[in-house]
Image (tube, rainbow, N blue to C red):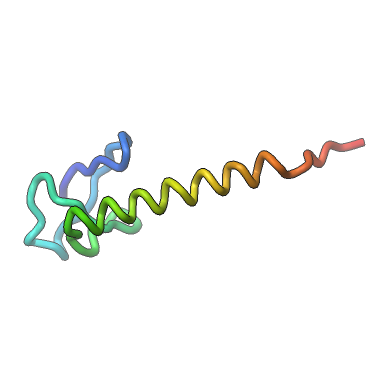
Length: 70
């Protein structure tokens, strides 16, 4: 098990499937399990893309009319 920082949120993740992972590595994790180790360039590209997607989704949510009960 390893403690992983997901943008400030720290979680315990099983690293059994990626024995090559070392402290400071970027990993791809799903449901508490590390799936692969990513190189820094790929990891930063993924983080940037996810942040951009989050901004787009937030903007779309702001544009939606509120469905208030009458």
